Every structure is written in structure tokens, then in C-alpha cells.
Picture 1 (cartoon, rainbow, N blue to C red):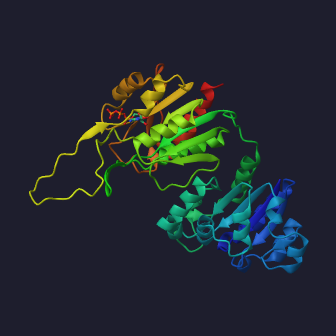
Picture 2: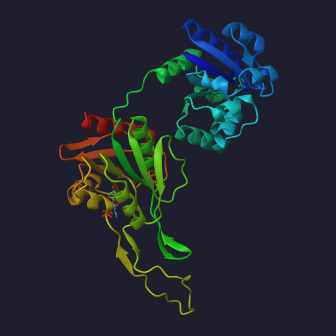
Picture 3: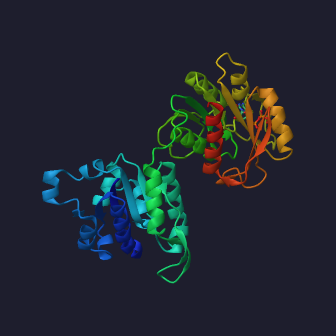
Length: 393
Ligand code: CTP
């Protein structure tokens, strides 16, 4: 294993030396890149001695630039490891800032990246850091969960660097060839809400965040599938390796799905608006002072899932979602039959599911109901994709 190790500036940086030692003991090679802040906590000399390799600290090293250029550093690695990933490094990674050697390499690399965070508990829990974490994970970067415990600053909570042995285990897992059971399959996914215009400034919408559909697209790509993601209006980053088509209305979504066929698996996660205005007004609808407003005429939107269920191009595996607030399983069973799907994945959205990060789902099919425990939406996606892969085995 050839590791490019980027060391950020935090008290946990000293543990990076232990990680270097462990990787060397496994027979791996390590090239260290120290940020300016990192160099306050661990010296280049220590890292050079442990790694038996030159240590890089600056973009502006004339000798290095002449010999190979800084981008070369990541070309020669199998994996880039950021340890410790400080709040500042995570923020710069998430924003795509390249203002030193470490962040330039992180922006330029095409290698997988593993980050081991370490920071003060409040910095870890800050909304900014949590948003950066979500962005990095959505982009396919593996960010380990920090350990919980007493911190160097005396506070208690999550934020401690995972133990070097745990980081080594994560490195091994990253470098093990991933099972890609859906290689050669085309997976088509819809996600998010649709917006149905009423007039140029108003629309009908719903609370769908798109998170579950995007997580499924990421999981399908990781399983080796070619993935087409037809997304309603949401502001989520596109998962790595996914072809994304942005749409606004149910009719645009239906057309994009049609154009993306054929596929082996279709997973319709979108919360498609059932109704649209019969005629969207060309100008903004105005009050006339009477206290009355002309009723809004609604017509039904095409049912994309049912359309696929009845189509000549029906995929081998057709999966729908059912967001319910009561009688979750009976409603899901009815939808299974009505829409001609193979599975309906039902969830109870009466709580914090819509817009939240966790989900409890029940997979309803002709062979019965399988309930999964409440999990993060990314874990739900992986569990579903494992079942999809089994169905093709
Ligand atoms: N769906 C679709 N096109 C629509 C409506 C729904 O493709 N116009 C899909 C959704 O993506 C989901 C499934 O059908 O996979 C069930 O959606 P849901 O809104 O729960 O079902 P409805 O048919 O709208 O039923 P109801 O409003 O009675 O709950």
C-alpha cells in the first residue's frame, strides 16, 4: 500500500507519527505532507525518519517542482489519508479551496480519500462542520467518525482522533477490492419533490429533501452500476459516478425517465406531486379586493411508477416508495398491486423522516414484509442495494 498522508494542525497530529509507524510495519510506504499548522505539532524530521521518505510542506519548493511537480505526489499513491482532519481542513476540502500544498493535492487527486477527524467537541458539533462532513461524504470521501472521550482541551464528547490501529483498519478496508455486484447493470432512480407551477411565482411542492434517493444513487454507483438519477428541485451534491438529470415538474420527470430507458432496475423514490394546475397562469394571480379568489383547477399528473409497471420497457426489478402517515403496510400492499411494482419500500413519514437524515423502512413484496431497523438514510440505501444485488445473483 502506498499512502499519501496529509497531516493537519491539531494536537492529535502527534498520533500521525504512530500511524506512519504502523503502515511501515505492514510493509506499506508513506509520503507525508504537513500543513503549516501541522508543522507546529509534529516536525518534518520525525516524519522523515519514521517514513524513511522526504516530507513535503510547501507548494513553493523549487527543487520538488522541477523534479516532478506537486500533483505527482498523489499520482504515486493508492490512497490519500487525512490525519488529523481538522475542522479547518474539512472546511477547505468541502469548499474546494486550494491555498496550500495539502489542499491543492486534495483538490487535484483522483485517488480515494480517507479522513480521520479530530477537533474540539463544539467544533465537531458546529452546524458548519456537520454540513462540511455531509458534503464530503456525499462526494464519496470516507470520513471516519471521531472517537468520544475526554479531549486534550478538557471537554468530553465526540472529536477525538480514532486510534491509529482503527485508522489502519479503515485504510485496509479502503484498499481491499470492493465487491461491485451491479457491474454492467443500469439503475434508474428518481428523487426529490416536483414543483408544479401555479403562476410565474408560485408552485405546488412537498417536503421531500431528496436525501434517500441521492443515498440510493450513491450506493448503486458504489455497487458498480451505471446510475441515472432524475432529480427534482433539491440542493444536494451529485454523488460520485452518477449521471444526474435535473427536472422541475412531474411531466418533465416522466419524460426524463422515459428517455433514460432501458434499465435493469428502476427505483422511484421521488415524491411526485399528484396534481398540477390545469393551466399555469402566464401572469401572477392577483387579489381583486373581494376577499375571494378564483378556485385553482387541478388535474392529475402522470404516475411514473405505474407507467413503468405497465410498460413494454418494464425493468426486471421495479421498486417504488410509499411515504405514509398511517396504515403503512396495508397502503404499501395496495400500491404494490396498483402500480405493478416488485417491491414497495414503505416508510412512516408522520415523524421527522421527511427532510431528516434517518429512516425506518419496510420492504413489501409478493413474498412478504421485511422491516429494517431505524438507520441513517445512507445505511438504508446500502441495505436496499444489497437486496437488489441479491435479486440479480
Ligand atoms: N409515483 C410516481 N408518479 C406519481 C406519483 C407517485 O412515480 N405521479 C411513485 C413514487 O415515486 C413512489 C410511489 O409512486 O415510488 C408511491 O408514491 P405515493 O405518492 O406514495 O403514491 P400515490 O400514488 O401518490 O398514492 P397516495 O397519494 O394515495 O398515497
